[in-house]
Length: 137
Image (spheres, rainbow, N blue to C red):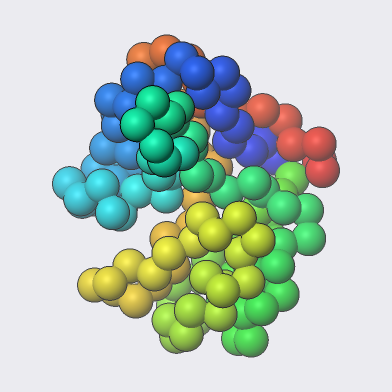
């Protein structure tokens, strides 16, 4: 059964970036926070709270529909799987993502797409992130 990453109680987030570091380091083998598929940022303003930009695990992902060579295919339970060998780095998926969480890796020209693996959730010290059974499952 497919699970998707969720972020609840973001008011508890202290912006330690442990989730981002875990994703970048363990999934993408990089120390750059830019390689993380989850991005923690402020909403803006001086006293703003933090938000997590994460893949919503769409049941009918627009990014997969926009991929003309089918390098992105829908994943059971929501979200997509990337076939890196097929991807040409055109960026159509980036433009199609309704929540703008997909970015192109500047080095590889491959899209950075959440696998919903839960590595980031394991490193969240406040239990804000979790994998939950998808409502689309």
